[in-house]
Amino acid sequence: MAKAEFPPIPDDAIVEEKFLAATGPGGQNVNKVATAVQLRIDAFRLGLPPYAWAQLKILAGSRLTAEGELLITARRFRTQDANRSDARERAAELVAKAYERQAKRIKTKPSKAAKARRMESKSARSQVKKGRGRVSVD
Image (cartoon, rainbow, N blue to C red; front, side, top):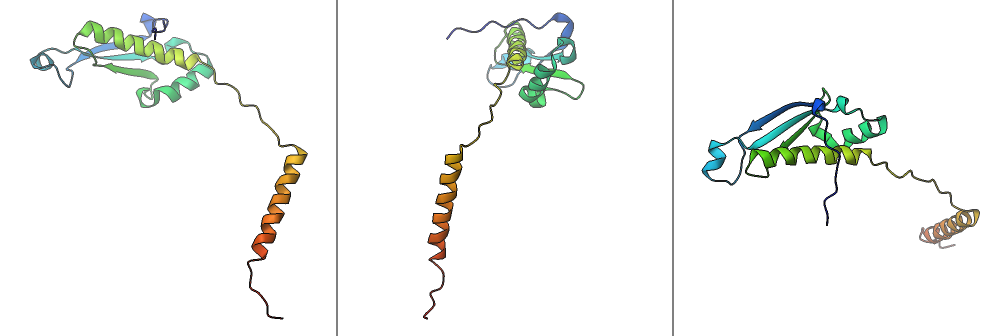
């Protein structure tokens, strides 16, 4: 499966790029080198239309701060460069996914015949249940 191309995040939208000590496997390298990257992007500077902004809030979830900053942490790779490009790629992917419009739901209405069938089956079921009552000995 080929990887889709996403437009890069503009540099003026990136607030901060901080390198952290990564966790997990990697031996002594993990303890010595700060390879994980934490990317803060000002979501307001992305200039998203209202529908995309609403969708981004849903998709990002807890990664979107109250100040409107998108927080992406990448620690999958063992080098800063690879993690930096991974974080930017994931941010671009998230923004591109926010631009996708949801299909509008079309309301449907049951036909008169379907309503009549439903009412008939309900009354038939009602008669069955009435027949389960106490039997009088008259």
